[in-house]
Image 1 (cartoon, rainbow, N blue to C red):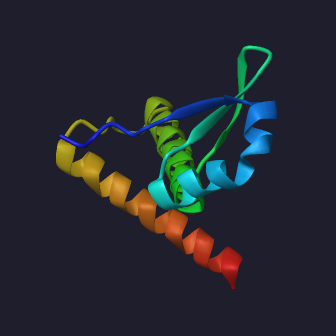
Image 2: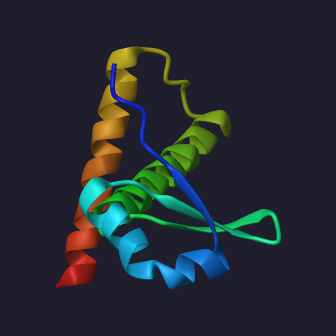
Image 3: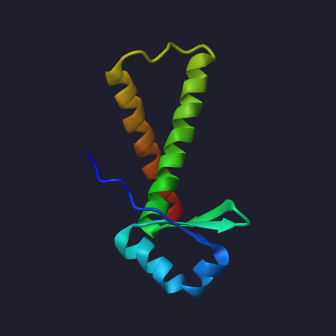
Length: 104
């Protein structure tokens, strides 16, 4: 079982005073800091690799939701784990291809 991720919380004004420390925790220890403004969560400082992975995950989920919608709109339902795995693999390849095109 993976170790739970340490998460820090700080008021924005307090985090501003120790911004270097907050960034170092995110960058080197992979520990996010939730910034709080007037008692409400406003933003999170995370490492760049974490952010990039979150973007990939979001794109993957959105693509799978579109494919699931097409299935709901009349295509045969995906019912087997093997077929779902193939869809996930195809979606990951599509996202990587789109990223490669965008970078070139």
